[in-house]
View (cartoon, rainbow, N blue to C red):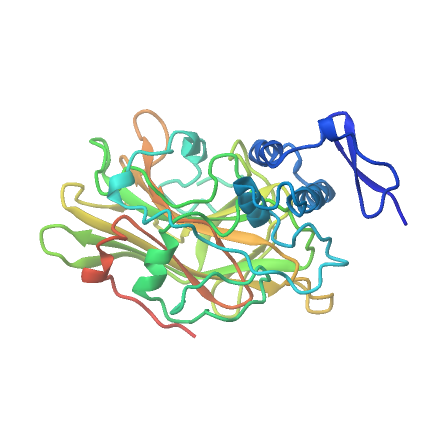
Length: 383
């Protein structure tokens, strides 16, 4: 049988029938693997094979009698939902849990974890800047790991979906150095003293396994941004666009990065192919930054629909192997522009990272998830 080895430090852990026995004193523990996962040293941009080998190692270690019940293995299995199998021998994908009992991210958590994500500020200007480099579900159960999962998806947005999108961890960790994929509320409804404007945003990352799909696009449409008046209890629609403004950026937002085959689809949405190492960052098209009364903010709500589509119908459909995650959020702006000391911006918060499937799904962010059922914003059903 073919010998396949994964090199961990100076040891060789043998997989798939090696004759040699690994040196046990150098074998990785689940804790070692979890640290590697957090450091992301095994998933350098564009090297999907490295991520695959890592997942094979996770499967080997976490299926052993010594470590199978280790709590770290639960987190590792979420990052490697195919149980370490390559696409050639994976078969049907296993179901992976989407959220823990972590509770709802709301105003009580404002201020946590935002400093690292400040590096992505400055990517959404006071007007639609165009592509990078140019100026100017009713039942929200965890989806199957397969993006072709259709159970639990609906064309109708619901309060339950909103709450689920702001609850606990992401479906899987994204390839982002700034977040583990969980929902956060940073400034929330408490706008900074310099703030005068508001906008919504979204971002789509490949997940941490960095799957090697080559014929899949992500399509988004129907982006909405609402503001709740604290004094009147009324929701006001700030932005409503079918297509979106967008840009391609490096995964740490340190600079621009390419997107491919951008198009406006027949239903008016925006579809792009996301190369390895890039993130698809989007916002409402047109004049996306809107002046608001920062002393009367009772809640903020952002929604969009997303799905996977085949890029080229004449080529093999690989949407089943694609692994993309979508998160929404909002930012405060000063003077409607970004991002000098005179025109600052700051994050309101972000939703958990949820899988994109071949079915249309609603994705949501709000600052008031724990109270939204008592006064929900207008919700839509769109086929």
